[in-house]
Image 1 (cartoon, one colour):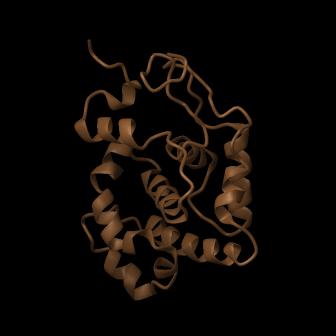
Image 2 (tube, one colour):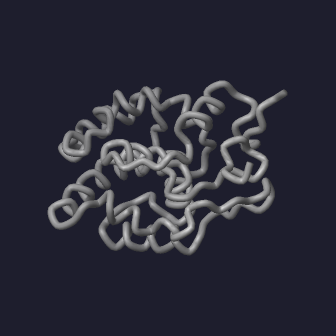
Amino acid sequence: MKIKRCLWAEDDSDMIAYHDDEWGIPLYDEQRLFEFLSLEGAQAGLSWKTILKRREAYQKAFHCFEISKVALMSTEDMELLLTNSGIIRNRLKVKSVINNARCWLKLKENLSVVEKLWTFSPENQDIYYHQHDVPAFTDEAQAMSKWLKLNGFTFVGPKICYAFMQATGMVNDHIKSCYLSRTQ
């Protein structure tokens, strides 16, 4: 019997592994949350498959997303990154990772960024959709986006924030027919 997954993960071994082993699992590790926020920002206008195939190059380019190291990256570092064919060489996207690391560290002086991000998770984290009715964003994602933007973050629109929430388990958006849906 074939395992049923969310349709977006059914045609590629990397996407299947990501779906089965990472996507939607609650994540509280600061460095990994920053990585997901950065990668979701890089995905804007592209497919997740494109970013997933480049994930290792992103990890190398951005010091495994160690926030304090990324925050110290200079203009010269950014210019060098723009020659790296392993990542998406969009100046604004590359700049946003460095900017967002600096914003994260500034916020961290007064609060737990991880705890704050999780406050945007809906009370009922298990939201089950049929394949055709998964929203592009929710009110919670809009609120997260607004808060991040107020604190200087970039490439954190509502759609990016919702994808981030899905990826890090802040919502459980496995469709009803997926074997990882808790409705099975």
